[in-house]
Length: 165
Image 1 (cartoon, rainbow, N blue to C red):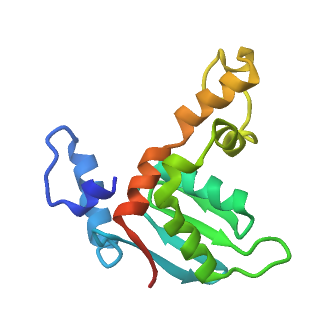
Image 2 (image 1 turned 120 degrees about the horizontal axis):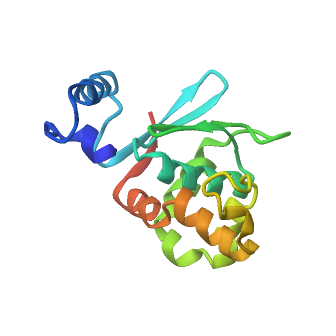
């Protein structure tokens, strides 16, 4: 997603409506689209991390930040992640930023149990009809594969800096 928005390329495989949407996003988000940066903006009730990385990478980042306990994830989509203060705590920008930078080493730091913990709270049987019949360990592996992008998240963190805008 990020590479598509950063390029000037016209994609022949995308229909006219899709090209219009891409062009609209490029124009609308031009000030935030910087090749090697993921800006973090202060919002009324928290922070917004502008990754433009797609839903699976943003889901991975959200799950990891939520697990750390330093923030509450208010929501995420293809383009950004909205962060709020953890219950009973303060939202510390410098801590969030350092946690995001630490994702560079993600590939080597997560065990299978860690990966399973990231998807443990997902609803059973939502992605495939056979999902409820899988043993828990296989279901967790299936959910990690379908919902998260751990290598992509590590690559984004290595290639980008997270900066308060």
